[in-house]
Image: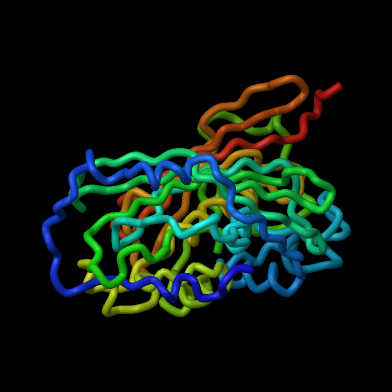
Length: 187
Length: 160
């Protein structure tokens, strides 16, 4: 099950910007490396007309393929589909254990999608995420930890409908209190 | 809303039953641009619809503590607008195979953003007519904060 307020639990330390004591060399531990290649617990979502329409409304996209059933049925697509980035709302499940995140802040660096089949209203999409790679860089924000993850979206017919490779950056020292909490995941 | 530009391919509104053919597309063609005027309300709507509740997108204190004047726009919301440039252009006559986006700069609500697309190249692979598109999101000052690329397949008149 996906906790619906995972992000709300993210503690963001504020007030002072401590100089990071970490260096790029000592950030990635063996324990962190053990997460590479391990898939998250799969989570399945029934794609409802209402949820797709709500997402399309939130992004401001009035395309009838997402919200006008009659028009979508007559189109070459033959029915309501979800916008491409709707996949972002199908949150992956948790990893097998909380990732030992060393940093306090998170940034989304980007995504690469491959779209193989439409996501249709009525589909059941199963989502699985795997950490592919981790590396560090130094920059304006101090030491930054990059995580590259691949998320696979599979429909009820067993077809992979899409993949998303997503890169997130974490940075900034955390306080002792929130060390080890897992905010980790965007998308 | 989509604003057709002079010299751009005519696709004035998001719609379907479009007949965009591979043969009609040329390198350098501009896709109709998409101008958006995001508000903090839209960021809250997007947080709710996407499940992305990272507080820097709705909590002013958190955003200011991180050095920003205001809450910041979700990268994934920017990617939705950039993808829409492509899907508005395609209608129901093609398929976006790949879409890649890089969040290089921070963007803030209550400022106009303009999303643009341009045909970078086209080629035939097997039976498929493939078109590469370069995309960008510009802030109100004209700075590109978010480049992206897409690979789309378009139907071919001459196929088979």
